[in-house]
Image 1: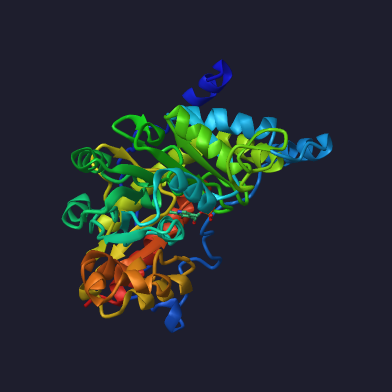
Image 2 (image 1 turned 120 degrees about the horizontal axis):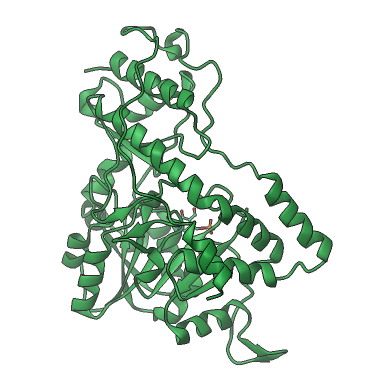
Length: 416
Ligand SMILES: Cc1ncc(COP(=O)(O)O)c(C=O)c1O
């Protein structure tokens, strides 16, 4: 890896999470009328849910490529590969068009049609839909109730004779229990592919996620921690696999118009690469800011009965692509949806990731009958309980104070 890339990566490692106290309570009195019922909202203008604005440096980087006329995948994509690979602890990094084709490019050389693949029931659809697109059978594994990550004990229970691979998502930016996944894989001769679309720069036992598994995939979609609009990357540590993925990415071309194998055009372009490089320079600092915000949220939520902050896998450092809390409907007189509607009226937008487990997606009906659906009770319960609070590097102390106040007010109004 180039020396400059190494130097850059040293500034990219996020620091340890610090536990901080909840901000002081705001002026809302207990029993204040909810905004949804005609009362005064805690925040007159909604707190921004995310922060996606480009900096002038990002714009200049994209304009420089436009001015050069070199729009295809070239130096900027290569620079992003070198720097992101180094920052995430991987030997090889290959940029591509988006996080979905990153999965396809990782799955094609590692999975055979007909394989059974252990997949999370609680994730974004792409992790699993690309397994199905490869002609494999997804075996749905339940989530852990605290960290939301794939439960490797359930994975072990669901192993079949045809299982060849674990395809796990580092969901919301929190690494899965990599130790348990690797142990299970080693015991049964399985491959492991990690979907880190939401987990740029997360670490496990002090190492970047690129150090683990057969391949790791990323998305640089417009709302991701590292966002280029569309974009993705695959990393791995095996030279032969990296070569296969590079060939698949670009029509199997080894020389001009010489095609060693059948492939696709799944390349990134240099405008995207330039934006990625420019934003990568700020990612470590922005990640630290997310982690500080998460510590503030943890303190706020711990003080409210019936609300639970997300737990982190032992040994993992999460990067909080999303900060997903849980609301226990038994502790309130409302449903989660009513709770978040009331928060919205107070000026606190939220989102539900995800409204149902993947086992209930119509797209997977042929792989998930009623018995399979019943076999993921944690995922079934999470979809009634989770909500994501605003999370980004631009959240201010004032935002966090208002959010804390709104949570306290809504929780008090709906107290069972
Ligand atoms: C976990 C996960 N995997 C894969 C993807 C797919 O990435 P993309 O939208 O870049 O195709 C996403 C995007 O939301 C995701 O969150």
